[in-house]
Length: 359
Image (cartoon, rainbow, N blue to C red; front, top):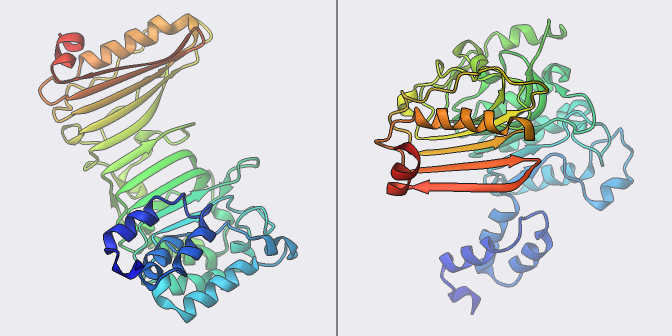
């Protein structure tokens, strides 16, 4: 009988199903087979709330209304508060786009519905928040949010259990990160600081209280970078001195960012994405010095260069690698990509690393 299956086996069965959005109906059917599957299936179904999600019936609703799906979700959370406690991830894709089949614009038009859902989630141990602006429009400007909607967001952000934040294609005020309660991991792509003064709808006084500083342990500046590593200061709510896992992009021939905001002695894993799009002979850009990274054990360098400057980019990479202390480095991965050669991956580890690369 299914009730005799150990809980660990049931968890493994559900874990091997595809991501919940594509296997939602399979998980619902599995929950009906036995009482032993009910709780694990419910945990899987409600582990993420996607605020851009729509179902087929929502396409029939007028674009000016909130998606009926979220009225049903609110009803479920109010009838069964236990299910709201299963939520671990909140995703907000296509922020600001109007229309129930387009994105999350309804959060701006219907803040009261959003507030009711937030009230149901206020005691949940939410761990991850994903914020993404529209892909085929100007970046989403955080200052577009009405004060009520912004406060609802910060009710979630201030939860001490929220430790992971990913952001893409957005413009944010300098006080944005000061409203989180215990952020540990941050991934930014195509994110900009807002310029000028925010619209005066009451947010200035509210944002004055957003002054907490987040002590990060992991930072990722990937893709198209609009925020420099040097701009992530404590004055903007971020403390990078405890970061031990870092990823960032370096665009040659510009000078590589300094490690002044980090504590290089704590870095254990580093991934550098090196891009060179020069149209003329590149100047002698100094390599990034990693000599102070005495605890660095894993280093990845992804090199992307045009055909004419492959030698320069490779020399920059080699000089950067040569500055790494040898005592702790355990693995090194070098990835090359250019128009003249196929993608190659060179990996070194242990004694092979010491004899082949650093000596």
